[in-house]
Image (cartoon, rainbow, N blue to C red; front, side, top):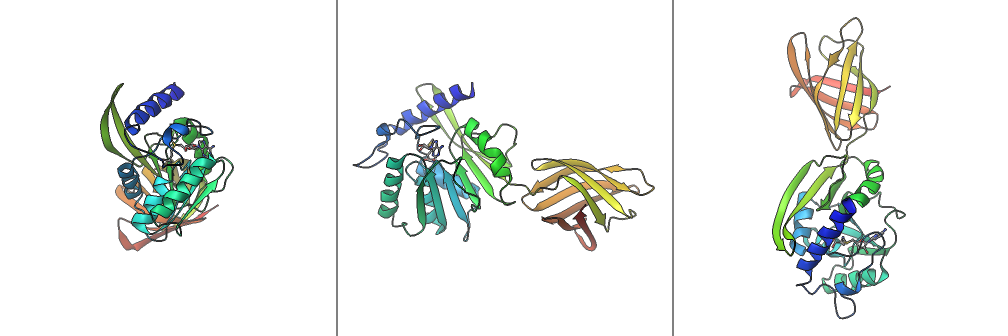
Amino acid sequence: MRFLTLITVSISLLTGCALHNYGDDQFQLRMAAHGKDIMWVPTRIDTATQMLALAQVKSGDIVYDLGSGDGVIPIQAAKRYGVRAVGIEYNPDLVALSKRNAIRENVQNLVTFKQGDIFVEDFSSATVLTLFLGENLNLRLMPTILKMKPGTRVVSNTFRMESWVPDQEVSVRSSETTIGTLNETIYLWIVPANIDGSWEFAGLPNLDKTTIRFIQKKQFFDGTINSSGKRSIAFEDGRIRGEGIRFDFESNGKRYSFNGQVNGSQIKGTLNGDPKLLVTGKRL
Ligand SMILES: C[S@@+](CC[C@H](N)C(=O)[O-])C[C@H]1O[C@@H](n2cnc3c(N)ncnc32)[C@H](O)[C@@H]1O
């Protein structure tokens, strides 16, 4: 079913793309029917720029596009933000086209195009990852993506990752195609720090020797605060955004909001925005 959706979307996007002259005098879109796991369907330049804006690309970022086609996303990243960008592409003709495109846009010093398989090549140094691959391939990449550095921004054109709710989604365009209206949406995920497990916390009000058990599901978490001799407290709205962590709880009839930062096996933050109410945690 998903595959069928992908083919349908690909065909409809291609129908739109066919109006444009993608490629150059040596290699054009119609020659690239076969990628490895998915064929080449180009992201339009304006969608590429919106994807980079959604990722909030900034100086110092390293942008990787997985399955980089003609290189439009890495080239736009270098051109608009002056950042280093890498494309990994299986089809050697597309790698060669990307390199020619980079020279034409005068960003050849900032971009690298690598011929290779996205399921083999290392992209762990990316701070921004862009995808236009289909939901199945996104899903296959998901375990690797979740192990990337917390805070890495992942933007996908059109396709979601089934069990990972996006942190943000933006509808970029709807276009009329031969099969009806196609709504193009881009999705953003921020790789969450891993907090799953038990932590010892200090500084929570009226709660000595506190152990917190976090049960993490991607950027969300549940769990309980356990303090010796007291009833365990369930917290609410547990949320991680990169290294940022927040949750709410009630103790002695008073509500608290914790906001902090995860740094490996340490968590530091404050309650109710009060710098005097400092809370620290360490992984057990
Ligand atoms: C839908 S196109 C997207 C191209 C580009 N990212 C863009 O947004 O314009 C997918 C690209 O992935 C490439 N591809 C497919 N499977 C691949 C794999 N296993 N490793 C590397 N590239 C792959 C295809 O050749 C194709 O160029």
